[in-house]
Image 1 (cartoon, rainbow, N blue to C red):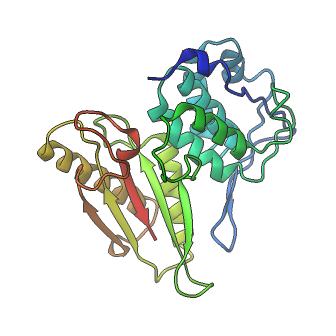
Image 2: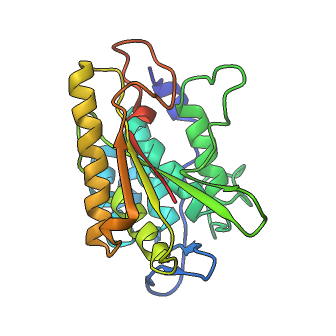
Length: 266
């Protein structure tokens, strides 16, 4: 269970930027450039977060996150607001996305002395490490981002995997999930010969039949969003495994947010 005494140690980050928000862009290598969001001391979501009003912070930052996809500042602050409410299932995917979008982003100003000089991705990693249960021996680092890139075959051939997380017993995309799918669709527009594998999964909570149906609906949700974003249906292969191939081992009846996921490989 998440401890409030630990939450107080979390780095609260304020980012000051000049200028207006800009749209995200995708380079020739498929990398999405984070959207510039002018966060400052008067931003309502940040003020609420700083004052400990986490419910208000969540509501305001959700709106900001939807309006400014791929802004690492919104992702980090919204993740922190959720984490302070003890909702790591919502915080984790935001932090993992911030690790991608904030890799080279250094805040102009932070509210903790120790975090000065750190990137948004590094701060998100620290928050996530505090909030997740202790990793099993030999387990992957908790700071592995949502998207991983693995070289397959030659050095010019790469494959990507994106994990899209869902709320408990839900098959509806979050704003962060929608942004992920939009990013995939944008990259695939430049790769007409590529194929996409979509695999729906569920945690152990619920019956085998229910979880199989739920993982099917999650896979369909991601597939349909991709098609709506312009990906040809013929490129997408979907499958679903229910709770039979969990990403993270869990005891029966113990809900694990990292297993409420659709894995997209392309």
